[in-house]
Length: 290
Ligand SMILES: NC(=O)c1ccc[n+]([C@@H]2O[C@H](COP(=O)([O-])OP(=O)(O)OC[C@H]3O[C@@H](n4cnc5c(N)ncnc54)[C@H](OP(=O)(O)O)[C@@H]3O)[C@@H](O)[C@H]2O)c1
Image 1 (cartoon, rainbow, N blue to C red):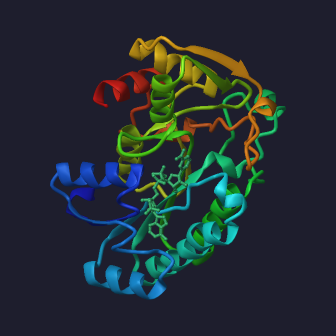
Image 2: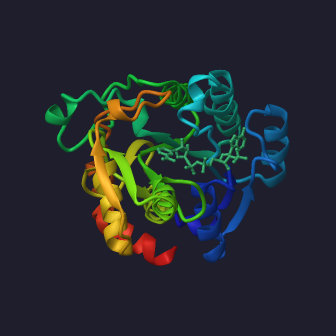
């Protein structure tokens, strides 16, 4: 069955992924209700029941999340309220109304031990047991478990290093910093893969179209470090700035970060209709569209 006849509801519609989803569906003439946090707060179960009851969607795409990784260490209850309890209420509601819940999780559910780079050179497979190293990752892992427990029809996409045109992300931060300084220090011992919101939406739609359920890893192709990612951004934009590679220890953050957070995307790649390009190619497209 084509997804073109479905009714969609997007939560977190003003975030970088939520904006991309809302615009993509609107562009294609789909029946979509984008809900910003002001229009639908997923920590308010009553409001969720009312808004979802009113629009009666077939598919809810949950782009709402508490995403401030460092702040989550101190505001853990707030992060948990959104990423775990809010998601649990949403999943129960979807289960009761037979709505497909499409949800995004993160590479930060994995421990990211340096030796996992050698053991899983292609990245963590979907079946690898999560063991987050920070509060944000823990709350996202709780949310995933709540969805599975609810027995709702669901598709959980674990994604990494997300960059969208609409919102704060590494690319925007690097370009901004390069205007302010002539020398930047960027960590070179955390490995992962950027994901851009336009292909993320395209590929998620392909999975929905093929009626995929369960948990699927979603990123571009390849692997890099934040340092090499930054260098590629400046190279492609022709920005002249000195980039110095530093270890994570030289760049202390409130929340610990996994050292290896590449996701194994072979399941995604095997699905008809998906289009996965090397991260450098996706970055080039992204920069052209900025
Ligand atoms: N960004 C990354 O690098 C990354 C990496 C891996 C996975 N992910 C996952 O990908 C998904 C999308 O991330 P993103 O980068 O698009 O995040 P984002 O730009 O921070 O957007 C999240 C949106 O959720 C909204 N929100 C927060 N609390 C809410 C609540 N209680 N009810 C309704 N909406 C609420 C936010 O609104 P306000 O702005 O008003 O707070 C914001 O619009 C998330 O599930 C995230 O965990 C992200």
